[in-house]
Image (cartoon, rainbow, N blue to C red):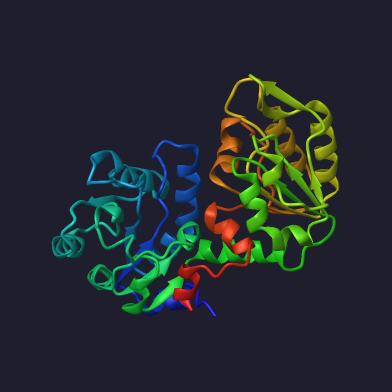
Amino acid sequence: MIQFLTPTVAKRYRGKTCLLRADLNVEPGAEDATNRVDAMIPTIRLLLDYNVKVVLLSHRGRPARRTPELSLQPFARIFMQRLKLPVRFVPGTNLSSVHERIMSVKERVIVTENLRFFSGEDANDVSFARRLAALGDFYVNDAFAVCHRKNASVVAITKFLPSYGGLWMREEIFHLNSVMKKPVRPFVVVIGGAKVGDKLRSLRGIVKKADTVLLGSSVFNEDDIPNISKLSFPDDIKAHENFAWDIGPWTRVRYAKMLARAKSVIWNGPPGYYEKKGFSDGTRTLWSALLANRGVRGVVGGGETVASLKQLRITKRLPKNVFISTGGGAMLAYLAGEKLPGLIALK
């Protein structure tokens, strides 16, 4: 069993320092950045309520070297704006110096430098994890999106500190379990974006439970698509230079009706190139149908799918029955029944 952060746990560490694993692997100005920051605010506020100093850890990008463009410094301002509290960025990759700065600053929320500037992060190096753990008194992982990665700040660090799942981590697991374990029928799965064949193969178990699997207009070779009877291909498409860039009007109507009747929905990947002018109707239609269905329990994930909500200016308030997952690869891996290293480490 994973032990999650609670007021009782936070009270136990009153006045101590928490290493909080975040997922800030996005451009600071991207549509998805606000979602990821906002997801962590409840966990941060709970810790602050008990005078716990919060040290945020995250990676960003895949830097070949320490490049300023991939620094986490811009996120200090973003957290400051969302929390309406002073937030300090502590630079540097010398962990001893970083620890001294953390202990000396008066701010209660601190953002540290990109973990991938350290060679031991991706390698899940135990020695690096031990030195990283020395920055705090206990560890909270609130970054479900990185739990499929066997990194030092996700796995090895738990060997050296009392470790817990964060409030958002608990939400992710609860909502994914509620749909995948005992879905209420009709159960509809929507698969779009790139690598549709790979997604279907990895999700074969959840696809078997579905009543219908709606496929978007992504470019794929039909020979790469598993032979699954529940697959529903587009009836018509909107093409650009001989490629399908969106589902057509007949398909939009049919897919919308299925989503309107659904009681459980899992959606990963937009049905078309919503970023391109003239090819966003399919994505917009699916969002409208899902958000209008107040009797459905839906889980939507994947960076592009979530980003489309803001880019298409769908201002309708998200109902509580539709959950936006911050996980992309982690969401797919969890739904596929894989054992996520980050979750195993928390047990």
